[in-house]
Image (cartoon, rainbow, N blue to C red; front, side, top):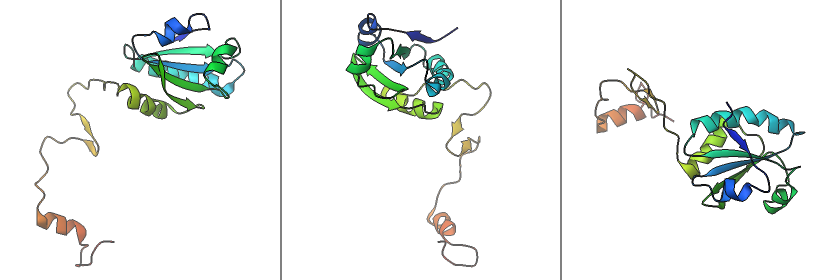
Length: 153
C-alpha cells in the first residue's frame, strides 16, 4: 500500500495548504530518473512519519502553474508546508537520513521504535546497566596525559 498521494492544481489548496498536519510536496516528473529513485525513500519516510506528516507528489508537467508558483526550476524538489505556508525546501534526490534530518528540524523527530528487552541506544552505543564512574580531577588529568607523562596532542 502506498503512503504517497498525488495532487494537482485543482486539489492542491485542499490537500496541501489547508491540511491539518505538515505536508511534504515532491515536485517531480515522469522523465526524471532521480525523481523515480527518490520514491522508495519517500515511501519509507511517509510510513515512519504517518499521522504527523503527509507526503504528496505533484507532476510538474501536469501542473505548470504550481511549478511556476513555487519556483520549481529543477526536480526533484521537496517543499515542506506547515499551516499553509512554505517552511523549507530541498532540491535534488537526497538520502533518507538527510530528508529525515530536514523534516526533524521542522516537524520533530519520529518516535524511535520500541526495543523489547534492550537498553536504549546512547551516543556512545548501548547503555550499560551500571552508571559510569564519577569524573574526578584525577580522571581528567589521566585522560590528558599519555603513558610516560607526556601531554596528549
